[in-house]
Image 1 (tube, one colour):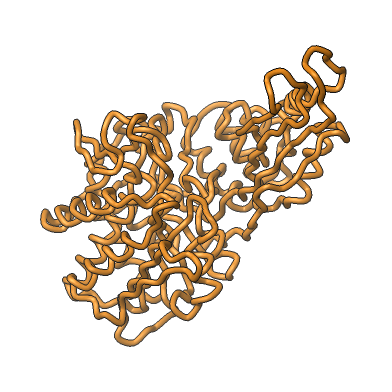
Image 2 (image 1 turned 90 degrees about the horizontal axis):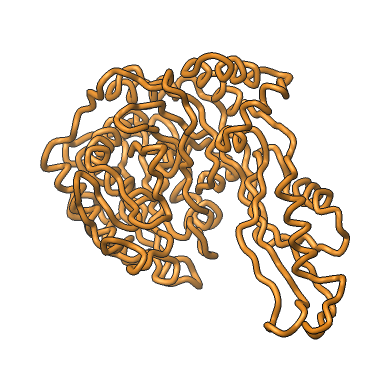
Length: 469
């Protein structure tokens, strides 16, 4: 539901790593394949109304051409949603020594209108070292890099110690046909795994040419949407009444704006702040260390909360994102509504957040109702052995880059695999600039250099996590 990777921002100059990037790139033919796949995927409009089936079929065709057996490449459409296709590819072990690894990636994208862009959104455009197109960042660039790396491993004859399953799915961005949810609930034998890797989250953060850190998503905030509504009998606009639905709603929204949820930390966020403190200096470093311990130093948390991204890591947040009211220019409003979009800490609950909103608006005439219910999931545990492997891959390409546990502020399909009891970790391959996040926006782009590095990174990552422990 939206962009999984909300980048780590607000790090000081002390956090910038001065060592130059020494990443290796894939073989030229493999990079050319990745670019070809990316161009093909961008050209397929996979917004919800169009569906993901054509993209899933394109993946199937490429995997069969790369030598995968027909039995190991499956395309499924969700019953009742014939345009929403899922492609599942299996790289088999000779004799599995552990439960499979499942890699999840979503094919759908958010809408893009040509009049809003300076380039055609549904065509890959390269300009000044950048690759433009709807989905290049979220997340067809990740998918193309992963597919090219998988083809390379297959064609080199690589045989994993355990089966590797790659699922390319529908409706992560919205809609009622989420592919990962459907697969784990109705096709569990096809995707059952002991470990889940998700390319739609975590990942590396840049500022300009400087690498900040690499985050491994072990948890994410929980998406839930409420409606705040005021109603009354209305009347003629020539005779204003003291009870006006729009004014009443506005007052309630002002109280929500001023309200702060209490500070909450989790094992993931405490680990994040403990690691991040080493990248900072002065009061910020001291405050990060303070909130990495229990009990939480609330004064330190409040100082950190002055930065919006840090505030979002320390508490549940709710914000107004939509507004409507009135039915005629010359009539008093009978109804006024606002959409309140909340991102809950994983330990919070829908009922508790609703109760806090009711308390904050302090007006029984304002109804708070659920529009999109929460789908909470537990944190995935910090796995020292897995983190050691991931750190080796990251630092093998980018020496000195710190690797840390990460709670995504956005949402991803990991919520479904975690709920299904499969430990899940998001490991995005394409580094993004914290000051130039264009996912879901106009002129979405990634750097050509970052894409090239991602193809090599995914190849190394596939080989690393394929090994039995």
